[in-house]
Image (cartoon, rainbow, N blue to C red):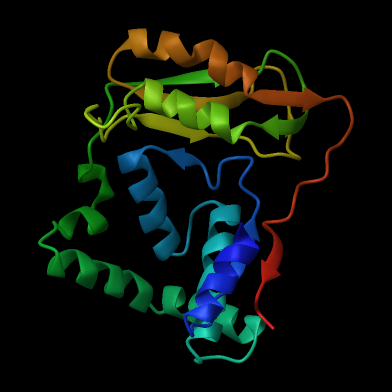
Length: 220
Protein backbone atom coordinates (compact mmCIF):
# COMPACT_ATOMS: atom_id res chain seq x y z
CA UNK A 1 0.00 0.00 0.00
CA UNK A 2 2.81 2.43 0.84
CA UNK A 3 4.45 1.78 -2.53
CA UNK A 4 1.12 2.45 -4.26
CA UNK A 5 0.70 5.77 -2.44
CA UNK A 6 4.22 6.84 -3.42
CA UNK A 7 3.51 5.88 -7.04
CA UNK A 8 0.26 7.87 -7.06
CA UNK A 9 2.11 10.92 -5.78
CA UNK A 10 4.76 10.63 -8.46
CA UNK A 11 2.11 10.25 -11.18
CA UNK A 12 0.62 13.51 -9.88
CA UNK A 13 3.96 15.23 -10.29
CA UNK A 14 4.66 15.37 -6.57
CA UNK A 15 7.69 14.19 -4.68
CA UNK A 16 6.30 11.71 -2.19
CA UNK A 17 7.92 9.36 0.30
CA UNK A 18 6.48 6.78 2.68
CA UNK A 19 8.08 6.40 6.09
CA UNK A 20 7.32 2.98 7.57
CA UNK A 21 7.16 3.50 11.33
CA UNK A 22 7.06 1.05 14.20
CA UNK A 23 3.41 1.28 15.26
CA UNK A 24 2.58 -2.15 16.70
CA UNK A 25 3.16 -0.61 20.12
CA UNK A 26 1.80 2.82 21.10
CA UNK A 27 3.96 5.79 20.11
CA UNK A 28 5.00 7.88 23.10
CA UNK A 29 3.02 7.36 26.30
CA UNK A 30 -0.29 9.18 25.91
CA UNK A 31 -3.51 7.79 24.44
CA UNK A 32 -6.43 10.19 24.73
CA UNK A 33 -7.23 13.76 23.75
CA UNK A 34 -5.98 16.02 26.56
CA UNK A 35 -3.22 13.56 27.45
CA UNK A 36 -1.90 13.52 23.88
CA UNK A 37 -2.03 17.31 23.67
CA UNK A 38 -0.01 17.58 26.88
CA UNK A 39 2.54 15.17 25.42
CA UNK A 40 2.76 17.23 22.20
CA UNK A 41 3.28 20.42 24.20
CA UNK A 42 6.00 18.74 26.24
CA UNK A 43 7.75 17.59 23.07
CA UNK A 44 7.69 21.12 21.63
CA UNK A 45 9.21 22.34 24.89
CA UNK A 46 12.06 19.83 24.55
CA UNK A 47 10.84 17.11 26.89
CA UNK A 48 8.55 14.13 26.51
CA UNK A 49 9.04 10.45 25.61
CA UNK A 50 12.22 9.63 23.69
CA UNK A 51 10.50 7.58 20.97
CA UNK A 52 7.93 10.31 20.32
CA UNK A 53 10.70 12.91 20.10
CA UNK A 54 12.71 10.78 17.67
CA UNK A 55 9.63 10.13 15.55
CA UNK A 56 8.77 13.83 15.29
CA UNK A 57 12.35 14.95 14.59
CA UNK A 58 12.85 12.37 11.82
CA UNK A 59 9.49 13.07 10.14
CA UNK A 60 10.26 16.80 10.27
CA UNK A 61 13.66 16.11 8.71
CA UNK A 62 12.12 14.16 5.84
CA UNK A 63 9.63 16.98 5.24
CA UNK A 64 12.49 19.47 5.15
CA UNK A 65 14.23 17.31 2.55
CA UNK A 66 11.07 17.17 0.44
CA UNK A 67 10.67 20.94 0.78
CA UNK A 68 14.21 21.54 -0.43
CA UNK A 69 15.34 23.15 2.82
CA UNK A 70 18.06 20.56 3.50
CA UNK A 71 19.86 17.91 1.45
CA UNK A 72 20.15 15.07 3.94
CA UNK A 73 18.52 13.56 7.01
CA UNK A 74 21.14 14.68 9.49
CA UNK A 75 20.87 18.33 8.41
CA UNK A 76 17.10 18.05 8.66
CA UNK A 77 17.31 16.63 12.17
CA UNK A 78 19.56 19.47 13.28
CA UNK A 79 17.24 22.11 11.83
CA UNK A 80 14.18 20.49 13.42
CA UNK A 81 15.89 20.23 16.80
CA UNK A 82 17.01 23.84 16.52
CA UNK A 83 13.37 24.91 16.08
CA UNK A 84 12.54 23.19 19.36
CA UNK A 85 15.59 24.52 21.19
CA UNK A 86 15.02 28.15 20.19
CA UNK A 87 11.26 28.01 20.84
CA UNK A 88 10.20 28.72 17.25
CA UNK A 89 8.39 25.38 16.89
CA UNK A 90 6.29 26.07 19.98
CA UNK A 91 5.72 29.62 18.77
CA UNK A 92 4.42 28.40 15.43
CA UNK A 93 2.08 25.99 17.21
CA UNK A 94 0.67 28.87 19.27
CA UNK A 95 0.25 30.92 16.09
CA UNK A 96 -1.77 28.15 14.45
CA UNK A 97 -4.01 27.91 17.52
CA UNK A 98 -4.58 31.67 17.59
CA UNK A 99 -5.52 31.74 13.89
CA UNK A 100 -8.16 29.08 14.57
CA UNK A 101 -9.56 30.93 17.58
CA UNK A 102 -8.15 28.57 20.20
CA UNK A 103 -7.12 29.32 23.77
CA UNK A 104 -3.33 29.71 23.67
CA UNK A 105 -3.14 29.97 27.46
CA UNK A 106 -3.62 26.20 27.64
CA UNK A 107 -0.28 25.73 25.89
CA UNK A 108 1.52 27.75 28.55
CA UNK A 109 -0.60 26.17 31.28
CA UNK A 110 -1.52 22.62 30.19
CA UNK A 111 -2.86 21.98 33.68
CA UNK A 112 -5.93 23.92 32.48
CA UNK A 113 -6.79 21.08 30.09
CA UNK A 114 -9.56 18.65 31.14
CA UNK A 115 -8.63 16.26 33.95
CA UNK A 116 -10.20 12.90 34.74
CA UNK A 117 -11.56 12.27 38.23
CA UNK A 118 -9.55 9.07 38.71
CA UNK A 119 -6.08 7.91 37.67
CA UNK A 120 -5.88 4.17 38.32
CA UNK A 121 -2.69 2.18 37.75
CA UNK A 122 -2.43 -1.32 36.32
CA UNK A 123 0.67 -3.09 37.59
CA UNK A 124 2.62 -6.14 36.49
CA UNK A 125 2.15 -9.31 38.52
CA UNK A 126 5.49 -10.71 37.41
CA UNK A 127 8.91 -9.61 36.24
CA UNK A 128 10.67 -9.91 32.92
CA UNK A 129 11.33 -8.07 29.70
CA UNK A 130 8.51 -6.48 27.73
CA UNK A 131 7.99 -8.45 24.51
CA UNK A 132 4.67 -6.99 23.35
CA UNK A 133 2.60 -3.88 24.05
CA UNK A 134 -0.37 -4.44 21.76
CA UNK A 135 -1.32 -1.08 20.24
CA UNK A 136 -4.63 -2.45 18.94
CA UNK A 137 -5.73 -3.57 22.41
CA UNK A 138 -4.64 -0.28 23.96
CA UNK A 139 -6.46 1.70 21.27
CA UNK A 140 -9.64 -0.29 21.67
CA UNK A 141 -9.45 0.15 25.44
CA UNK A 142 -9.19 3.92 25.03
CA UNK A 143 -12.38 3.90 22.96
CA UNK A 144 -14.15 1.80 25.58
CA UNK A 145 -13.46 4.38 28.31
CA UNK A 146 -14.63 7.26 26.10
CA UNK A 147 -11.43 8.64 24.54
CA UNK A 148 -12.56 7.73 21.01
CA UNK A 149 -15.61 6.77 18.97
CA UNK A 150 -16.82 3.26 18.19
CA UNK A 151 -19.68 4.83 16.19
CA UNK A 152 -20.04 8.20 14.49
CA UNK A 153 -22.43 9.61 17.08
CA UNK A 154 -20.46 8.56 20.18
CA UNK A 155 -19.51 11.33 22.61
CA UNK A 156 -15.79 11.82 23.27
CA UNK A 157 -14.56 12.67 26.76
CA UNK A 158 -11.39 14.78 26.30
CA UNK A 159 -10.20 14.10 29.85
CA UNK A 160 -9.99 10.31 29.76
CA UNK A 161 -7.24 8.15 28.34
CA UNK A 162 -4.33 5.85 29.03
CA UNK A 163 -0.69 6.52 29.84
CA UNK A 164 1.50 3.65 28.65
CA UNK A 165 4.38 3.29 31.10
CA UNK A 166 6.42 0.53 29.42
CA UNK A 167 7.99 -0.11 26.02
CA UNK A 168 9.12 -3.23 24.20
CA UNK A 169 12.57 -4.10 25.54
CA UNK A 170 12.02 -2.62 29.01
CA UNK A 171 12.80 -4.73 32.04
CA UNK A 172 9.96 -4.65 34.55
CA UNK A 173 9.65 -5.83 38.14
CA UNK A 174 6.62 -7.29 39.90
CA UNK A 175 4.38 -4.44 41.00
CA UNK A 176 5.73 -2.02 38.40
CA UNK A 177 3.13 0.18 36.67
CA UNK A 178 2.23 -0.84 33.13
CA UNK A 179 -0.55 1.71 32.58
CA UNK A 180 -2.15 4.67 34.29
CA UNK A 181 -5.81 4.76 33.27
CA UNK A 182 -7.53 8.16 33.42
CA UNK A 183 -11.29 7.73 33.83
CA UNK A 184 -14.27 9.63 35.18
CA UNK A 185 -15.90 6.57 36.73
CA UNK A 186 -14.52 3.32 38.08
CA UNK A 187 -16.99 1.22 36.12
CA UNK A 188 -15.34 2.15 32.82
CA UNK A 189 -11.96 1.19 34.28
CA UNK A 190 -13.35 -2.25 35.16
CA UNK A 191 -14.36 -2.78 31.52
CA UNK A 192 -10.75 -2.42 30.27
CA UNK A 193 -8.70 -3.78 33.19
CA UNK A 194 -8.24 -7.31 31.85
CA UNK A 195 -7.90 -6.16 28.25
CA UNK A 196 -5.07 -3.79 29.08
CA UNK A 197 -3.37 -6.23 31.40
CA UNK A 198 -3.37 -8.86 28.65
CA UNK A 199 -2.00 -6.38 26.09
CA UNK A 200 1.46 -6.57 27.68
CA UNK A 201 3.42 -9.78 27.17
CA UNK A 202 6.62 -10.46 29.10
CA UNK A 203 9.60 -12.62 28.23
CA UNK A 204 12.04 -14.40 30.52
CA UNK A 205 14.85 -13.35 28.17
CA UNK A 206 16.00 -9.84 27.18
CA UNK A 207 14.13 -8.36 24.21
CA UNK A 208 15.71 -6.06 21.64
CA UNK A 209 13.77 -2.79 21.28
CA UNK A 210 12.48 -2.31 17.73
CA UNK A 211 13.67 0.60 15.56
CA UNK A 212 11.56 3.74 15.36
CA UNK A 213 11.41 3.39 11.57
CA UNK A 214 11.67 0.25 9.46
CA UNK A 215 12.18 1.79 6.03
CA UNK A 216 11.69 4.82 3.79
CA UNK A 217 10.21 4.40 0.32
CA UNK A 218 10.63 6.85 -2.55
CA UNK A 219 13.42 8.97 -1.07
CA UNK A 220 15.84 8.32 -3.93
